[in-house]
Length: 345
Image 1 (cartoon, rainbow, N blue to C red):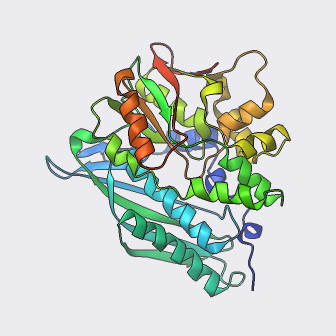
Image 2 (image 1 turned 180 degrees about the vertical axis):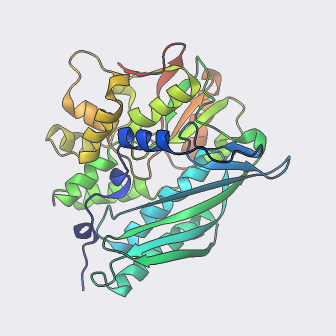
C-alpha cells in the first residue's frame, strides 16, 4: 500500500511552527522559571538549544524538535526530521551523544510498516551522526509527527550563542534557501524528480560542521536557519547581540528551482506569517519584489548554519563548510553598530 504522508498534515516540516508573533506573546506571558547558575543558555534569546554546565570541561546541550510530514515518503520524512533535530546541537557548537524518539501517529490511518519506515529513516541519520537512539515516547494522535530529543556535549568555552555576534562580523550561510518553496511545490504536485532529489539532498545533510566551527576563535555566534526563515533567525542574532544586520540579496545562495517557483507564486503560508510577525524590523530596498521577500522569509526545514565571524576568519569558515560538502556556503552580509534590525540590500 502506497501512503502519502502529507495528506494527513495541515502544514509540513518547520513550516508548521507557531508564527513568530504568536510565539513571542506566549513566551512573554509564561511565568519565570528556575535559573540555576549552571544554566549557560536558556530561552532568553530564542537560542537553538539549552546548555547546562556539568564541569570545567563539559556542558550538556539539550534540544528537541518534531514536526508534521514535509514529504510523502516515510523513510525520507524520518531522515529529514532527525537531521533537523540534531542540527540544534551542532548550532551550539556541540557534538551529539544520543537521541530519544518522539512519535505521534494516527494508527487508524497510517499502516504500521509506514511508521516503521519513518523510524528507520531517523535511525539511519542517527547512525550517520554516530549516536544511538536510546529510547523515546509514542502516542496515537490525529496528525502524524516525528522528531527527536537530541543531547550533546560541548566545552563550556566553545558554546556558540546566537547573542554573541560582534560589530564588524561577516555573516556566512551554509545551505541555500528555498526548501519551503520546494515543499509547497511538492504538495501541489509540481515538483519533479530532480527538484525532489535537490530537496532531500539539502534537508538530510547533517550540519556536523558546527562542531568544527566552534573551535575557530574567530567564530562568535551560530544559529541554524529553520522555520522563521533567514530574516527571522538573523533578526534573533541582531536582537540578542544588539546589532544591525545587513544582507546582500544577490549574495544569497538560492535553490534555482525554488526561485522559479517563487516567481510563479508557489509559496508556503508560513512565509507570510513570518513576515507579519517580524517584517517591521526587516528593511528592504525600493523595487524589492514579492518573490525575493518569499525567499528571505521561507521556512527552512533542516536549513543551514548561519555564522557570525571575524572577517579574517571567513576563509577558514568557508573551508570548514566545504570540507563537509557544503559547496554553496557563502558570505551574505555583515553586522554593524546600530538598532537591532535586518537591512536587505
